[in-house]
Length: 151
Length: 281
Image (cartoon, rainbow over all chains, first blue to last red; front, side):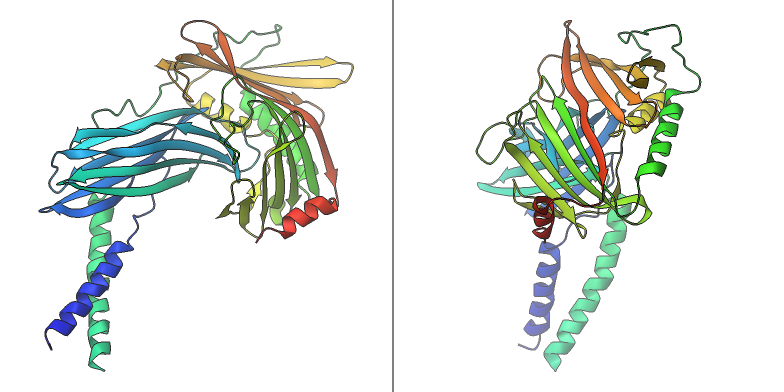
C-alpha cells in the first residue's frame, strides 16, 4: 500500500497534466500541432495539425493535417470536416468548406485557398476541423481550430 | 501529511519533466512531416498589371502608390481618430461569389449586403467599443456583433471571444494589400481625377498567380486578381474598392466590391446602440 499510493498519485497527476496539455501556440505560417492519440500501437502516436498562411497581398490559406509518428505507421486517418473561416473582428465574413477525408497511410493534409476580404478592424483567419484516426477497431476524434491574425 | 508529500513530490517531478518536454517540443515539436499532397507553400506573384487600364497619361509609378495612400490615411487619422468620438459608417458590399456563411436559420448569407458599423475611439486612437450590423438589401439583420471591455460577441452565432483594442482602418486594409504587392514585386499604379464633387485618387494593380488556382470553393480557376480603390483626395476616405478575379477560362468574376454609403463622426450614439453594448458581457 505504501508503494502503491505514491505511484497512483503520480499517475493521476500525469494523466491530468497529459490530458489537459495544449500545444504551444503557433504563428501565422507555421503549423500548430497537437497529439490527438498517444501510444495507440506500441509507441506510435497520432497527431493533428492546423496552419493559417498569408500567401500574397490578397490571398490566404488554411491547412489541416493528420499523421502518425514515433514511429509513423499506416492507419486509416483524415478528418470528418475541414473549413477555413475569415472574420473581421467578431463578424464572420466567409466560411469555406474543405470537405471530409479518410485514407490509409501515415499522413495526409489539405489546403483551402481564400481571397482576403476588406476589413476596417482586425482580420482573423482560422483553420477548423475534426481529425479522425482509426486503428484496431477503435476510432478517435480530435476537434479543434487554430486562429491567427491576417494582416 | 504523507499524501501531501506524495502530491508535492509528484508535481515537482511533473514540473521538471514538463519543462524538459516543452523544451524538446520547442526544438523538435514543429518537425511536421513533409506532406506529399501539400502544394507549394507560397504563391509567387510575378505580375505587372495586365488587365488594369491606365485612364490617362498621368498614370505614375513614382512615388509608390502605397506611399500616397499612406499619406492620405495618416492625414485622415490625424483629423478623425479623436478620443471620445464615434465613427459611423455604412458600406454596400457586393459579390458574385458565395461567402459560405450559413446563418442560424440554415440559409446562406446573401452575397450582397450592407455593413453598418459604429466605432468608439479611446486612448491612442484605438477602437475600444464597436457595434456592427450586416443587413440584407431589405434591411433584415443577417449578423450583429459588438465589442466592449475586451470582449467581442457575435449575437447571431452566440460566440464570445477576447479581443484587443484596434486601429480603425479607413482604407479597410487596402494600404496593406498595396504594401504587400509592392514588396512582392508587383507593379502598382495610381491616377488622379476630379469632377464637380471633388478630387479623387485611384490605386490599382493586378496580381498574377504562378499557376491558376481554385479559391473560395469555386471550381473555375483564377489566373490573376485585379484590385482597385478610389479615395477622396480631400478627406482621405476610401469611397470604393473592387476585387475582380480574372478566370483562366476567360471572363471576370466580381469577388468583392465595397462602396461607401455614408460616414459621419458623432459624440453620442442612439439608445439602441447603447443597449447592444450594455449586453456585451
